[in-house]
Length: 203
Image (tube, rainbow, N blue to C red; front, side, top):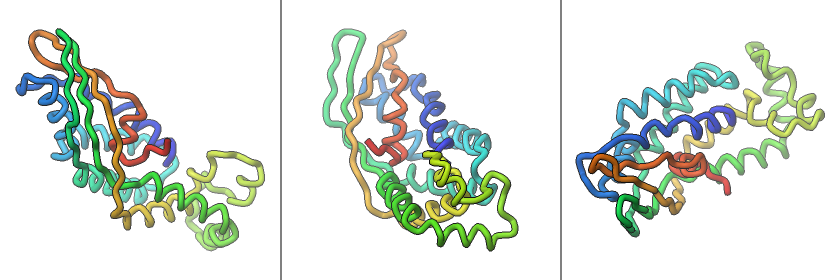
């Protein structure tokens, strides 16, 4: 699933090129964030495309992950702190509040690493284990840092825990805009900011 999160951060910048009928920088940013809150078709189509391309999750895990992202969008809230306009360029500072998925994922990783035998046994008992997960002990023994995020039993455990997340966290984001043909357009946002919107930023 880690691969999915990276791809998600790299691809959902299609939203940033949209124009707005609210011809102010703040209005353009509100429209941008509103696409997530209102689960705009464009947002969901892109989310589905990214999840479908992931090779580490089963179909059931992909469905659960999609539900987690939709729940994140529903719970996203924000407050505009500042707007600064200089001719045809502008900056809008926003404080967003999202479900704190990042902290929960980190806690899941810590628990998993401290209880490897428990999860290895579950994998051995699972006759339908996919070919990408040929043994937790072997993978960890080889010292492959990212392997843990691609192990089916860990993904199940992580998703289960994420479903119970109710605590939130806040991030500050600065949106940069350019006025084109008398319309304020949000410039492409960074992968870090995309991670913040999804509650996945661990910085």
